[in-house]
Length: 443
Image 1 (tube, helix red, strand yellow):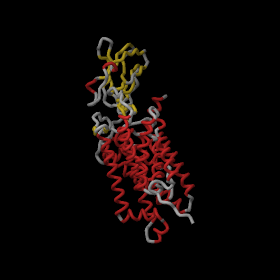
Image 2 (cartoon, helix red, strand yellow):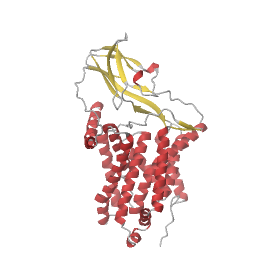
Image 3 (cartoon, helix red, strand yellow):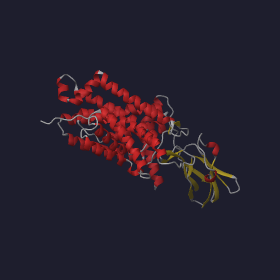
Image 4 (tube, helix red, strand yellow):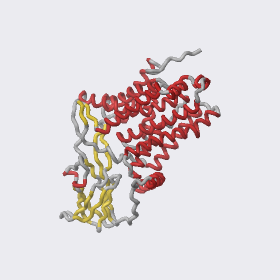
C-alpha cells in the first residue's frame, strides 16, 4: 500500500511539472528521462540507499542516487544488479528464488561517502515470486561524545543559521501586516511553494539548483502579487473586516498545505546539489558546511538590501508611509494599492527565497512552511508588529532560543520551539509593544 501511495505521489508530481518540462524543452534545457513501464519481476530484493549525517545535533537521512546494488550467490557469483534512483530506491530482479548476498559496489559511491564493511553485505532468502527488503545506511560513525559546555558555541551558531532563515521569511510577513493590517496565515505556504518549485525544477526537470531557485523566487513573487490583485484587493474594496480576511488566509493555508501533500507527497526530499558536503569549515569551536556559510551570507546580503531599499529609495519610503498611516499616505498622493501590490510581491519573493534556504538546510517537506509559521509570528511580535527591522531582531532572538532549548533540555527536539515561545512571553510581559515597537497613545 505504501509503494502504491508513493507511485501516486510521483505521478502527481510529474503531472504538476509537465508545464515546466514544456518550458524547459522550449528553452533547450534537458528534462528527465521518460519513465519505463517494465513488467515487475517475479522475485526481487528492493530497498533504499541513504546517507546519514548530523544536522543541528539530529541524525538525518538523505537518499543517494546512482549507487550500484548487486546480488550474488553465497559463492560470490554475480547474479543481478540495479542502480538507485533519485529517491535512493532500487529493485534487483532475480531470475529465481534462493539465497543471495546483496551488497553495494563501493566504486559507485559519491565522493566523501563510505559504507562500513560490517554493513555492506546481507544474506537474503527470497521465495519464488517473493520479495525481500534491505536498506543501506551509509556515512561515518556520527557518535560524538563531548561535554555539555563544549556544545554551546555550535548550538548558538546553529541558532544564528535558523535565525537568518526566519528573518528572510518574516520580513515579508511584517511588511504585509504593516501595510494592510492582515495577519496572513498563508505566508508559511508561500515558503513551501518556493521550496517545492525549486525542488521540482531541480529534481524533476533537471535544472541546476541556482537557476531553479531564481525561477522559484520569481514565481513566488508573482504568486504574492496575484493573491493581492485577485483576492485581497477585492476584499479590501468591499470593506471586509480584517478578522474575516484572516480566516480566509487560514482556509487558504489549509487548502494549499493539502495540495502540497497530494502532489508532492509526505516524504522529505533533498536538492540535487550542495546537499552532501562532508568537509565543514571550522572557525574555532564552530563548524559549518560551505552551503550554510553561503546561506547565511546571502541572507545577510538580502536583509541589508531590503533595509537600504526601505530607508533610501523613494518607493521604500512610500511603503513605510503606508505602514505608518495609510489614510494620510493616500491623501498625500501615494497610490496605496500599488504600494501594497509591491509589498505582496516582495513578501512572496522573500518567502520563496527563505523556502529554498530552509529546504537546502533541513530538506524540502510539504509542511515546512507551517513549521516555520509560528516562529515567524513570534519573530514579528517580539520585534514589534509591522516593523520589518523589529522582525529581524525578533528572528535573531527566536532562532537562537529555539536551538538553546535543545542544549538546555537534551533529547527534547520535539519541544525545541518552547524556548522561543517562553522568551516571547517574558519579553512581552516586560515590553508589550515588542523590542522595537512604539507605544500607542489612546484617546
